[in-house]
Amino acid sequence: MNLLSLLLVATFYVSKTTQAFSTAGPGVTRKSRCQTSGTDADTNTKQSSTTQLQAGLFGNLFGKKEEEAYDPSVPKRIMDIKCDSIKSGGLRFALGLFFIGQQGTPVKGSWKANQASDGVLDMYYVDNSAMFSVHLTDKLIFVDRYGQPSLQYQLQESLILHRFLDELQTLAFEGDDIEQENRLVVLSDVENGIEDARTKLPARQEQ
Image 1 (cartoon, rainbow, N blue to C red):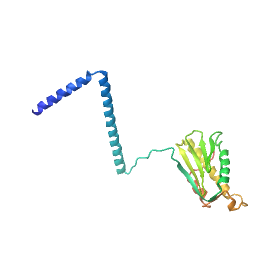
Image 2 (tube, rainbow, N blue to C red):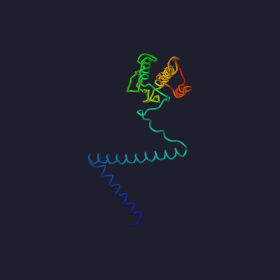
Image 3 (tube, rainbow, N blue to C red):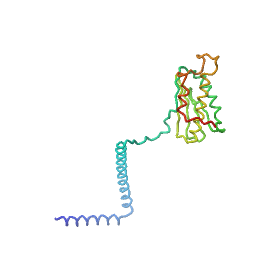
């Protein structure tokens, strides 16, 4: 059988197969659609994988890396302050009162303060986009943020945290008659501890 004959036979079978599917009942049509959808899904998956692989290869080639997916449940460290000593009970009480006093900044109901557990103070913003937690350990004070902060949240968080640092400075240094061992917090870096933490925040803009 020569090549022309083979082509004619192949065309005949393709024509018959197409005709059979076009005259089949609804059950066959539904099945064929499912089969087609599965095939399309497989094809799309393969194409997607190929595209991702190409993106990775070409991205690395040109010095670009794909950004990792952001997980709002994973905290973002805002600042930390090393300390020589912390009287956790007294400091937690003092800062708890401070944050309660900040709930109306800039307007009533902007923030909600909550003592999550021993050594953890939470502040929730009214738009529910994010919140921050202040953690008190034996030798460290650190602030973590959770969520996907709105622009308004970030502006107000910065304002609150600048005031928080002011409060820490007051507790750590003011009152000449207070002995060092009796202070609620003693910073490791007396000269720059507060200011180094402040550099992690946007420039201060009081309202």
